[in-house]
Image (cartoon, helix red, strand yellow):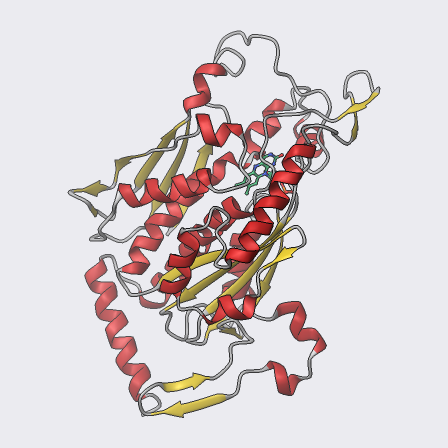
Length: 391
Ligand SMILES: Cc1cc2nc3c(=O)[nH]c(=O)nc-3n(C[C@H](O)[C@H](O)[C@H](O)COP(=O)(O)O)c2cc1C
C-alpha cells in the first residue's frame, strides 16, 4: 500500500493517489470531511483556514457504492483560494507580477529550497513546502483509519502542551481511547484537561496579539493492535522507526518519542521496563506501559503511545526575524505571509492520520489479503494462534 500527493498551497487543488488499498472497505466521505474540518477549525489557526479553507473531499476513483474496489483511489481537495492566485501562479502562460518572496523566512524551506533548485522565485519553494499539503495526508490517513476501525483498532490524539502549558499526561494516558476522543472532541485545542485548555487558549491569544508564534507537543494513542506488527529482523522494517518517519515528515514536527522516551533515560532499568504477567482471561499482559506499546520494533499488544514535538510557527507577523533580500543582499526583515499562530492542535489531527496510515500498512504486511474479508479471516486466525501460543 502506498500513496503520493501533489498540489500546492495556493494552486488549483491538492490531490493524492492511493494504491494497494484493499477492496470491500466501507468509506465515508463525511468522515473524511469531518477530519479535514478538524484540521482547519482548531485553535491556533489563522485567517486563511477560518475563512478560505473549507476543505471538501472528492473521491474520483477506486470506490463504488461506498466500498473500495482495490483499484487506485484518487482524491481531490479543491483550493478555494486559487481564484485569488491564478494570475500569479498560472500553470502556463505569463505570470502576473507581485506576491513575490524576496526575503526567505527563518524556519522555513525558503532559503535552502531556493538554493537547491536555483529558483529566484522563492514562492516556488514555499508553495509546495507549506503545510497545506497536510490536508491530503489527513484525507489519506482517514481512509486508513476507516480500514482499522473495521478491525477494531482505534487511533486518538490529544495536545499535551502548548508553549509552557502542560496537561498532566498520567491522567490522559489512563483514559480509554473512547473517553479520550470524547474529551478531546469538545476542546478547541484538542486537550482533555479543561484547566490546561483555558491556559492554552490564553497563551495562543497572547502570542497572536504580539504577532508571535508557539509550539508544543501532541500525543497519539492506538489501541486494539495485536502483538507482532512491524519487525525486529531488519532496521527499515522496525515499526518504531517507521512511525517516527511518519510523524517527523509532518512540517514543524521536530521530535518523536516512543513511550517514556527521554524521561526513561533518567530511571533505572528496573523501574522503566514493563513486567510481564499472564492470566487465562487476558493472556500475556503488562501492568505498566513505559514502552508505549513497542518493543524491538514490533507492537507488544499494549496501547501505542507516541509523543511529537512541534516547533513554533516560523512566519512571524509583526516582528519578522532578520533576513536578506536575495537579489540586493540587503539586510531586511523576513517575508510575511498570512499565517497561523500555533500549529500544534492541527498537527495533532495530521499526526492521528499519519499514524493510522502506518498502522494500516503494518496490518496488511502481517496479514496480507486483497479484500477486507480475507484480512478479517487472517486477523481472526492470528488472534486464535495468539490465544493458544505456544502450543
Ligand atoms: C497544520 C500545520 C499548519 C502550519 N501553518 C503554518 C503557517 O500558517 N505559517 C507558517 O509559517 N508555518 C506553518 N506551519 C509550519 C511550517 O509548514 C513548517 O515549519 C515549515 O514548512 C518548515 O518545515 P519544518 O518546520 O519541518 O522544518 C504549519 C505546520 C502544520 C503542521
